[in-house]
Image (cartoon, rainbow, N blue to C red):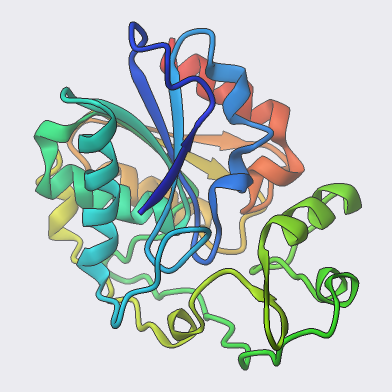
Length: 254
């Protein structure tokens, strides 16, 4: 497991961990995490098979929950505050239900969770690309899933930090086997077991979680706050509304 910290030596500060979305990595938080180093010891992790974490022979849904808890246990012996986006937020909710003693506060950012009467969003399954002949070509093929508006320079930065060079050319850092991972639909009853304080943040223009689903997720969790809706934000809120997200997180962490 690979994780990073912006100020690991500040051991007198409480820990704050950021968890990325599916096929993402720690660099998705590079423009968010530094705003919190004054008050917190700030970390971000790469889930198995993503970013700079190692590949596994096979992947299971529970494995990613254990990834998160393993990093929390490594950086601090007490309960920890975690911010999870999308896939990372869904893993965070399950961690709250199964490892409540490891977490003191969970902030969930636009994460899908299946409830009765709701269907999962369609998942775009792209064929695995062949290695790109050069870095420039690879950067030009980088796309967000789901796609949304994002400053060109920021999209290029994410592309650059998502690549690795191999003997055959440039490829994305994540394990290609993850493209075939079938994410098991979560059991709504799990939400009712959560005792950890939850704050749920919803992106107004999200193509993953609509307003009705956000309200139903919050209603199913006994101690949840929200949903706090970010006006004008798409699903990848740290990309199109970074300063607004920082403001929301600061308020929730106050």
